[in-house]
Each structure stands twice: as structure tokens, then as C-alpha cells.
Length: 324
Ligand SMILES: NCc1[nH]cc(CCC(=O)O)c1CC(=O)O
Image 1 (spheres, rainbow, N blue to C red):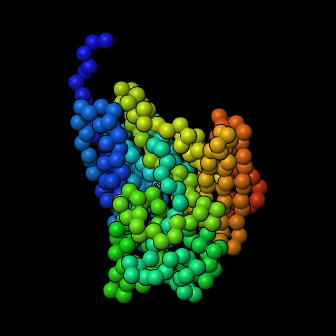
Image 2 (image 1 turned 90 degrees about the horizontal axis):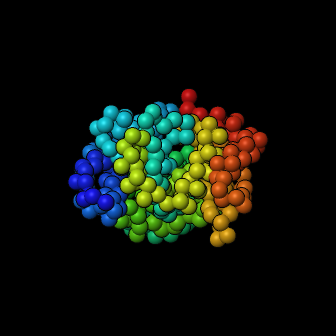
Image 3 (image 1 turned 30 degrees about the vertical axis):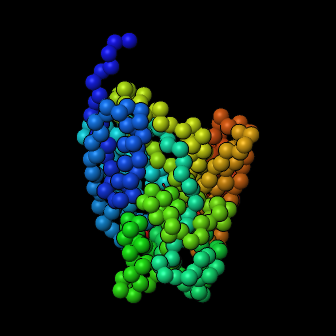
């Protein structure tokens, strides 16, 4: 072998929220461990979505950051885009010339209950009747209402820190919230795990498709970079995420559909996929729980789960909750 080529500059596009920056730092460390000579440049990418606090369910809001990053990648402005798989809509095809090369090992997939700093509430059951719980996720709303139909669910968006400020600010924040439900993985990335009072088991609050998974995307023709990034791929995560994503795509949900999906690999290598689709208030739902003895075909498992959910009326549930 001849001498190594000089290390290249690598431009990572990132959202500017603290969570996105923490994820970028994490990936930067992983990349430097593979090649310490890489010159990694962080390129902030904005989208209007981060500025909004209202209900974004009808605006394609979740997909805006994905689209903004993908456009910058396509134009060559950045070399690498990092996505929370959970935020990548099921119905948006990958842009021409781009490729998802790695799925990083999945972090905690569970949702967590967070209460104001000085509150004595330890679990959802401790909240008073009619308590106000902040979440803008229709998946969380439906499942929280199944657990506690008396709760008032308040749509709260924005960076995790902003939401915590609203929660802790109480009356002064003009939004009196008794609790928030947030992703454990997001709290962990921000060093805020101590704020989680109750971490919901996956069978009481089924996670989002792709929860806890970061995916790395680059240009198809950037083969040297693709080869480097592939080393960061985690095979089990890819398999599980594939089953969940194929299920999501088969359901043809809109950008904020009340869909949950979680695939786990058993000790003997089999895959177990649970999927649920809810009505907005959680009173009606479809569910599938399928097992595959062939871990090599997660896509078939996902497609099968979607078919099962659709046979139980998932289409009507998704369309009822659809934005006007
Ligand atoms: N929709 C926002 C979002 N997208 C990804 C995460 C972090 C955790 C993850 O990757 O699953 C979060 C925060 C949250 O939902 O509280």
C-alpha cells in the first residue's frame, strides 16, 4: 500500500438545537476515532420548523429539517447529514443521489415523564385528576389518554430546554403544565436523564418507529466517505429499524400520524415487531404483534404488520386523525 492520502475535510450539516448539536458532537467523536486526521466542520442548517410552537401536524413540520438537510447534501454544501430516524417521515422518498449508509446503535427507545423540578410527583398515576401534560406527539397523546383518560394534553413544541423552561416556569410561563412526556434518548443526549421521573415501559407506551436511532446520509458518489461511515453501522439496529420503517411506509401515514412501532431482536435472533395505530383520543386502536424466525427478512415482517393493522381498520384511524 502507498502512503495514506491526506485527510479530507468533512462538512456535517446539523440543526442548531442543543440536542442536534449534542448528536453532532457524538458523531464527530465516532468519526475521529476511525480517522483522527479528519477535519470535521459543523455547518448549522436552519428550517422554519424550529421557530414554531403551535400545532405543526398539518404543515409537514417534522419533515422540514430532513428536507433542508437533504437539499444541502444534494447541492454539495455539506457532505454528511445526521437524522433522528424518528423524525424522518415515512412518505418522503430519499432524494436522488443520496444514500443512508449507517444506522448507529439504538439508544433508549422509551418515553419519560418529566415534572416540574420541585414537584413530588413520581409517576403518571400520582398526577391529579385533569392534570395538564405537554406533548405535541399524537402517538404519546393517544397512549397517555388510554392510560389516564382524564388528562388534558397540551401541544408543546420546541427544543427540549424550551419545553423544560415552560414546565419549570409554571405560572410565569403562562402555560401551567403538570408534566411533560419526552424521549429518554433526547434527555440522555442533553445530560438531563435525572429529570426523568418515570420511564414508561414499551408495553405501556409503545415507542415511535425509529426511536433512539440516528441515521447517517451522504451522496451516493462519495464512495470514500460512504465506506468510512459504513463502519459505524450497527447491524441489529438496521434490521429492527427496517422492520419498523417498512411497517410505517405500508401504513402510508401522514407526517404526524398516531402510529407506534417497535421491533426487538430476541436472544435467539428472532425478530418481534409490535405496531399500533390509534384514534386521536386513544379509545380506538389497531394492533399487531408479529414474530419472525428469519431475522434476515425484516422488510417482510414490517409489510406483514402493516397488512395486519390495515385489516383492523388502521386506514380509517389514520385518516380520522389527518390534518385538515
Ligand atoms: N421529535 C423530536 C425528537 N426527535 C428525536 C428525539 C430524541 C430521541 C430519539 O431519537 O428517539 C426527539 C425528542 C423527543 O421526542 O422528545
